[in-house]
Length: 385
Image (cartoon, rainbow, N blue to C red; front, side, top):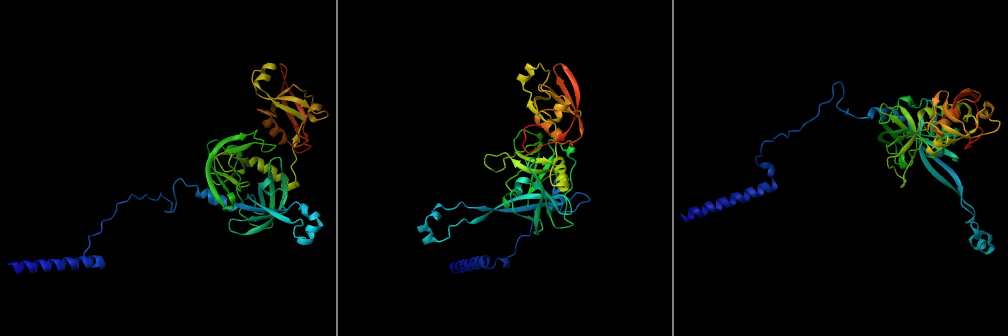
């Protein structure tokens, strides 16, 4: 009996040892459990679309607009100041001319938008300011030399031209259809990382008083805009251009969700004049404007703060010839309401020189309308409108 038990124990031990060896070295020799399928919830493709399409995507808008957004590389010559030791003959004897004035090149980058297939590109004036070499990089990697057609420092816009045909041009949106809360996408080349798309909404319209440009009527957006985005496209959810990205408010230099774009209506007006004449001609009537404060409202016994106060009239100007006087309050220009000095400035500069315009005024307790023949704005950053 003992021998039988010993034989059984030895046989069991050998079998377990063999099973352990096989399980360790050749587990595939052992019979396995049948595979149990994992249950997953898979979204079905929307009817009429391919499985690659995604709901709530702006890829179609980006696909339409992105080929028209370019990167702009500029450079200009910068001279280092002359080393004062060069005036010492002993220093020049030992070190020669190695420390003579040496011209260096400063490089910068920005973005631009192809406006038509014949090579016209819209960007910011500060992107190409003082540059003596400008190169445009298309999204497909092709690089082209660009020349400045014209620039307008008062709106910070510039038009470039490249010698190319059949370029992918962007489609301009109807600016008056843009609303606060609309989804917008910013496309550009931030910090030189390559074409980038960011999304946000229109945070505000008609932003003025920021002292960024002489004439301001900005679209405010929280779509991320960083260095290098200047001159790039702000598009709507269908891929149409609504603005040219221009500036941000930031303490760190990076985006904190307060970005500004020049409306496409302003950009189009400036662009057409720059292409046609190389310069922008603006209207001017020759008045100095002042915002109506609550204190002025009490002083003039006004019912509201609507309109702007005429603080001064330039002698011999269109306003002077029309009979406008200091103390008058302008409430309309061609029937359009005037909210503040910036809004009146924008209305006046949009008028063609030589055009007759009607200014609605309040003078004391009287209301009157005066016909003014618009003149040509005489200079950049002139304080009179």
